[in-house]
Image (cartoon, rainbow, N blue to C red; front, side):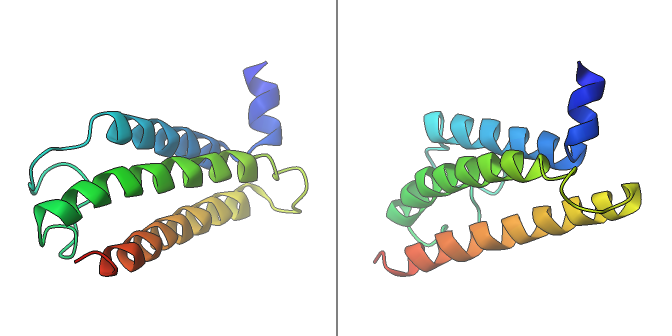
Length: 115
């Protein structure tokens, strides 16, 4: 059964999508309470105030879980795309990087609106 799943999916996107979803849910349920440099959505703008910090933790967690779900869906496109194994890996890395950039852009844009 696992062999069949790995044949029709991009395993990296499947795994990373699952991790993004899981971490998004965990961060939403258990966001860091205080501004810190170890855990949470940590950017210069999210660490400007406690209000921005609290908002950024919950909002980024929702976006992360949503993006993770998107990666899971995209992982099943392996049979639709004419890629060999190397190209499949490159595609997975490209989607991962694009996802992180999208996460940052969405959250930072929303943080700018908070005073």
